[in-house]
Image (cartoon, rainbow, N blue to C red; front, side):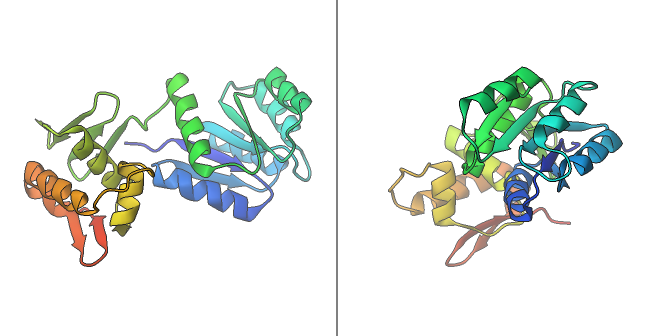
Length: 225
């Protein structure tokens, strides 16, 4: 499945990297620009940007000017980032056609959630389905097929498989899995993960081998070449 492209525009490299890392994990392809003029050049050169994350205060051309230029030609969703939280800034953004307005500092997870919500509303989200190694995960329908055949998973088994697939190739500790699949307020026994993984592997058949055990740490989802 083709990845949706998101253009992240900020003159701070560390901020761009932070946003890029979180979006990449969710399956998006991130394009970067360091100032407003570069953002305009990249946007019109790419032609298939699905969403912009745009800082307000930048050299050469600020975020407002970028929005004005793009809105003359495109209705692409735009999220504005700014260190200023004044109401007049937000109103100016919405008047120009900005879809969301987030003040710094912000939670990267919240930003990703906003991105996914906007793309769902605009009907351009590919994040509702995930395909990897013959496994297709349909998040909207909560269904999984393996080589075209449906398999029955419990709610938590589905969430666990989705989390693994979205973080393929990454070593995931039991604590991290608990925090993300069972939520941060879960204080139960980490062995519940092992039980769910065992059941999930069984239901996945040969594809269950994609879930590798990292002894003493956790698991890694890795598709065999």
